[in-house]
Length: 358
Image 1 (cartoon, one colour):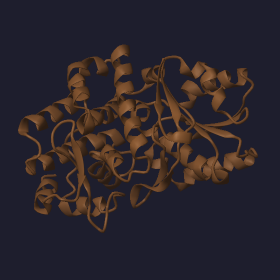
Image 2 (cartoon, one colour):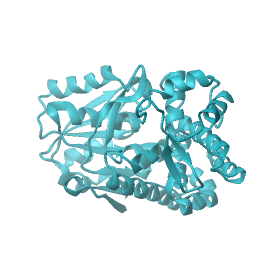
Image 3 (cartoon, one colour):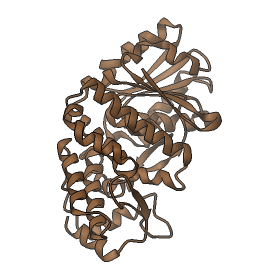
Image 4 (cartoon, one colour):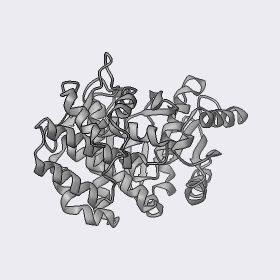
């Protein structure tokens, strides 16, 4: 097992990465106020891992309340959030009850936001079961739900007590979901870790085959990058916004196509190529660098061609992005592999030309 720490003073917490973590109660018990938890999961993950985690906790004397939600991005909304509140209230949960998110990014975001708001705040633990949630969404305290007009528009920064990334859970992950997670892994190399990007280029075939050593290293390096950024900028006032490479374009794709039609990581991959396209038009990326980005995403079996919405539609949807300042869309663009910037100082005509190509 490998362990990282997210350094946030009194709210610091560990990330444990390894195999067999769902059966190790000692990783969870120190983080419980009392032996009373609600495990929030979904209809896909529950048959695979709910019993295993429940048995582990009950054997240690922990009372467990299961909350099983429908699966998918389409359910990351206020109606589903209320189902969590309903279960917590019906079971007379208190501020000492810990919520445990057992699932992917949707479950983690929903559970975290429920924890941030139920009784004005209860503890929660992240047990991510997808690659995307292990390397990205479970770390850093972003929680929330979607609104019909925009993705992740309602939420809170609320940190977990601990993150358990059990790589055994990735053995049951569908290939399409695994590829979606690799999009976020590649992102870290692109925005701040050129050596990691080089390593990914050399090891992508083994990663896609779920080679244990390569997979563990990819998760560790990704979480290390995320933890470093979050420690410097918890509430996304500066550097943390760089983690949104491809996301402004990608969220527009998800919104336009309907939540869940494109997986989040797929939309981020296409958005990353759009950002690379604009960066090249700005003369910030070379053709060779764009080709390296494209080849890495292709090697991960990710879609590169966004839907043809037209520039006006893209701009309208991107105008709902959380990074908009004073009515101006700010974009995360690249000035080389391993170096990203967040800027509103781009050529609007070149952005229009980029968007018009799709």
